[in-house]
Image (cartoon, rainbow, N blue to C red; front, side, top):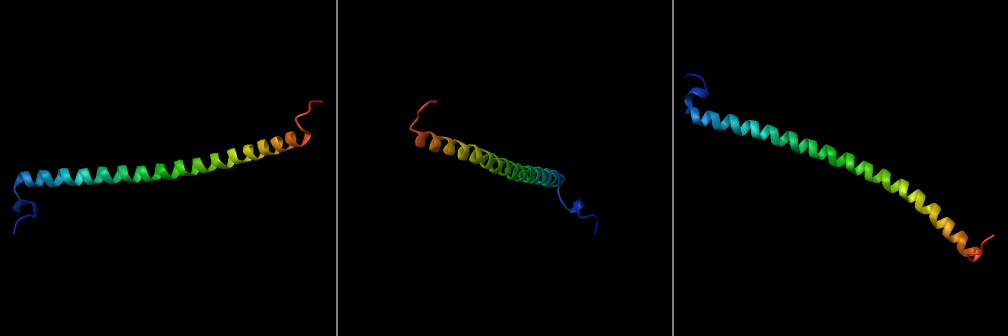
Length: 73
């Protein structure tokens, strides 16, 4: 029995190599996509926290302005 690849037609070996390289590339892209989705999720969460703090300040100022009746000093 010769080598395992010797039993296949050369075109089949080329197609197998192309398929394996494509699978590896697609796997790498999928991993990168998942990593970037995680990074974007973290950034969105931080943005929501920062905007929430500003929103709370604005709500407090609006409430205080409502209590004074909008009078100027």
